Image (cartoon, one colour):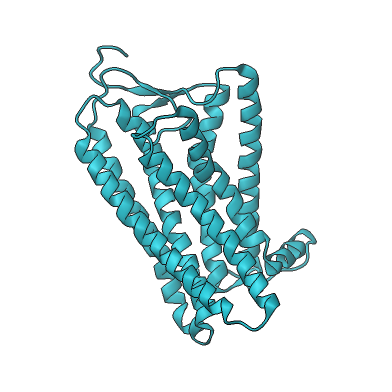
Length: 315
């Protein structure tokens, strides 16, 4: 692609060149993707089918599962294709992948914030929980999360259509992501980076602040409980939730902020695997499959016991 004024396609050079390692990675990612789809689809089916799970918390969890299916499907199939066959991706295909990564990633950030607020309302305001987390408010939280995702993705993806690529079309990553593509451009990207950092930082701090403040209030309330068993269960649940959130935020921040500071192809790939591949797999396990009510509903589903089949009252 030397001496070209632009690019019509890109080459994804992620992962090792060793055929054995590539086959091994293909099998690993295929298993992870299959487990992610199965876990999240089961959660969706169970929540829709069991009347005991027709509550605001599980309404948000069902949307998280749907979002995780979308998030994982944006990156993993393309990574599997590059491991076993073609490594090329069209110019507009690359832009589209960046758009959907930004959309699903940002939407998940705010959906996690909504779920943290739901737990705050349930634990700290139990008498007013039903009034706070009513049907319209729950729909507003989900709709607002998607709206923030659409806004963020369009603001940061639209300028990429004007980039010119003069020297190389090789992306040393397994997927098209904002830092990898912008780094290849030979045009002035200062405004693009400034816009990205402002939106990324503002939305990231806003969503993480909601989560942090919610968990601070939750911990404060739990410490006042007299039951040691209640404290143990609440701390166990909240700590696992918070660890997943911290891993998701920290890996995303290091990937997008650290790319210009200390470039490392291996580190970038590991961070991307964490938030785009591992997190969609962990979410149904941490948020749903550890819950006793969900376990019982899954047993009913696997045991072919009749479930109430009407749609959730919150959809």
